[in-house]
Length: 424
Image (cartoon, rainbow, N blue to C red):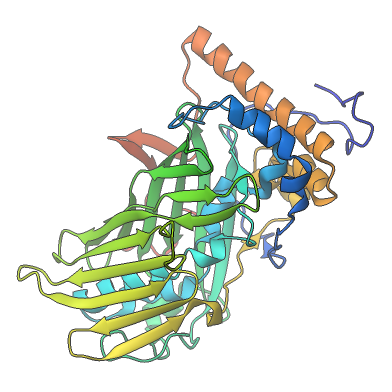
């Protein structure tokens, strides 16, 4: 697998890495990520409409698109593994959850963080698709969160959003007054496509594990992506586990200017406390109605009493109405983004997302669709060859950081209570 002689603008030869285990995750060389791009390129759609029409003519309603090769111009220059990390746009809201004094406050904080996490993962107004991760691909990053940072939401008696109180034990976890949050993701399966990811903060004694199976379907003038699987947030000091799913996403108007929305019913449950939440991401009606509408109810254990109702738009204003009549409004656009820290591409391992996809990304940045398509094709063909070889030899892919467990995948070294150093 050398250089592409047929593609004159290819950025140098591609040498594919061997499938070998990565060493320990190195966060020491990470740098604050550059400002996220806004990919609102409409030319890709207009210029390549004939390609889209040809593709649509071969698809049937409800068809599974998992094995369909979609055109390169719809890609958004980052891997799905990185997109999951970008949902952690407000790490301060996430890290404050275990600090709250009672189960009700913690559940309400989980809901706040969850509902404000999706807007930053969407980059640009035009619906585009992240790279399908290659099996064995990994992505690592971290966040440094100041210990005493003002929460951006308004104060409410139900959810304390004042400065964080930090104990001497907590002070030992970070440096220079910062709390560290770490992220590791890996593509653990090709067919079906399954991404596993794990967040960990030893100082706060919290971790979050997930494995998500992505399933895409064709619905005429739209494409739906179901994110199948569960996320488990563990608060070790409290012995609590919050289990929830991720909403399905839809790309609409794929022949004109594609736009994205979410639509699903999601539950968040904590078995120990009995608190639960029912969340509905509403799709836009054909006539009238608002885009990106979301509503939620949080219920108390046993009695089923509603302690909080939420209404609004997940990418704009969210109104929280509490049982005592008080209200709080959060404008997600006003919440500062906590930038993730990523190692430069030149220091990354061969199978880390940005290095693995760098030639595709560089070609897309300059609008060279042919070069990007050729690099993407070779990456995917190499993956298919590896799958065929493993199938013939009867050997499973050696995942690096996760292992199969029950119906999903779990990080190999989950944080244990009392472990202040962590595993990431």
